Image 1 (cartoon, rainbow, N blue to C red):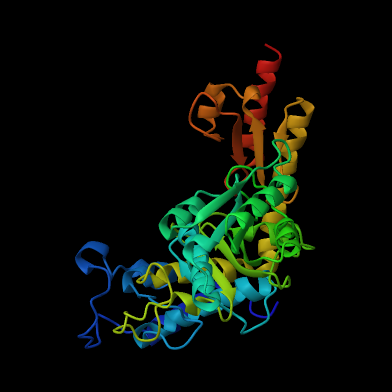
Image 2 (image 1 turned 30 degrees about the vertical axis):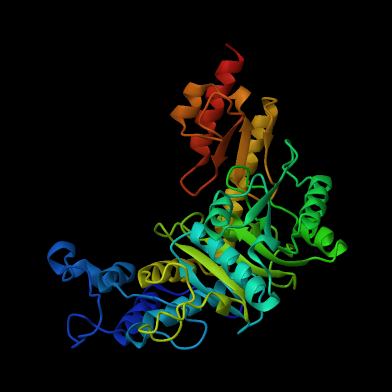
Length: 412
């Protein structure tokens, strides 16, 4: 690990206080030109004594605006302290978790994984149009039917075709024959450039795509492509549970990754992370944002620096070994649940390195599903799956109560 370490409570508090001291202080400084301020003190009690021991809450009250991308060029100098905190977060995630070389990535803390995925599609669409002379109707998105809805949403916004690739019902693997057929048909209809999205933990199943399934076929047909990894759910699980994984920047074919901090990392909603290789994010520069110091290279524009501080606090509270231990505990709980389901001969899907178990709906009565807040694949009579996510709050006692109810039904 180069950047990631475990810090004491005092060290964390002092680091955030230093960052806030380097920012503009709207309570004391004569800052006349910013259309922003700290949170309203009459409502949010900025003088509350407990704030001195709550660095993240201090940052929310201070309300720094992290507009722009702080890994490239200059940024708003009024918030340089907490921008540095954001860079530290991005270095931990890109270099220490996803194996990038230092100083080779750009990115930002986004307001969620949906935006981060759309940011990737937007960036690649513009890359193909600006750098390759592509026409809009020559670009297509490749992603599986299990892909998060942010991908079709992005396709709609950016006026691109999404080629939805089917997956096998039981093991959720991409149908490689159907993938090649879709690519051949797209090529024949005039598509020349492809944005491939591989999942690291799909929303419903936790399934992990093999990125090679996309790249091998695209290269076989001599097609231009960019490969994005949607690790919104799995990004803070899979690299720790599967330490031999190469779904990271050690694979030169992967150009960008999305991770959500408000899922496994338990940061406030909405906190996504977008990281990409150098030389790409410039394709979404908004030149008209001339009043912004530096370059606005993000979809959202203004965003809260407090979210970056929240992620920093979590990462540096645990450190890499503490986080590995947490993921390991969740893996053991997941295995416990799977063992109990096996004993009951209940069919389910589980990606072996993930902490999601998705059960065939025929085994789960609706009243039990509602009691335990199981998530259905679809909210109608045709639902075929229910999902259990082994988060930190889901303990063995909860799983045992659930299993005991299923056992009682089996013996009724």
